[in-house]
Length: 217
Image 1 (cartoon, one colour):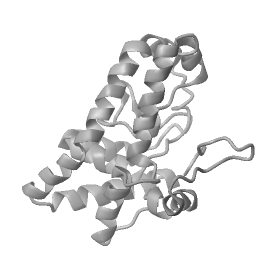
Image 2: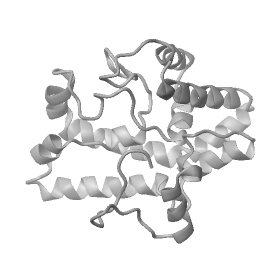
Image 3: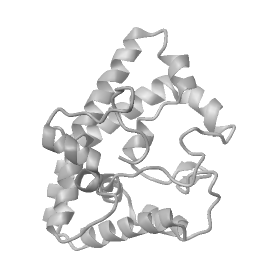
Image 4: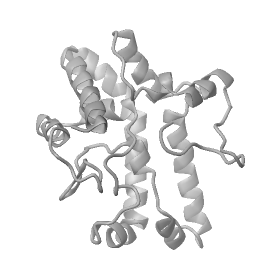
């Protein structure tokens, strides 16, 4: 197993183990916490399916080339793992364990199967990724769609960008309070995101002042 597979495996084991010990009542409370996030994810799915399905299928899926999937693995937040496990059945989780233990072609994401992503609720970074060709082909000359997409990106930050109280931080804290830690808990161990939490509206900026971060947070 590669270092990436080991890291992902440990997070998956941690989450499945902890959740299996919760009562049905605790699980219902936890699911209620996800309601707004899952509504947001549904809205993103509808938007992408309506406007990007054809171009993404032709550009990436049929050609088996993808700017976001042509490497061993993608960035996953710890909260991504939690949400996905909660929303997955036993068979889907078993498939994740199986693929993480297998030998992999490092030229593509280990979670990319023959029928697409193996996650039931894809990592947020994957869901919100649009390559330049897709953006130019669909959004460039359509101000209304640009506004819709920017609104969705703003909603995305309300769940994972810790300049305010956010779901991703809360889910990490739930496990920390139970005595568990993971390298994927970026909102509690990433220097950049910790500064965001400390300074409120602070934004990580690159050398030219652009907003956002690239690669691992």
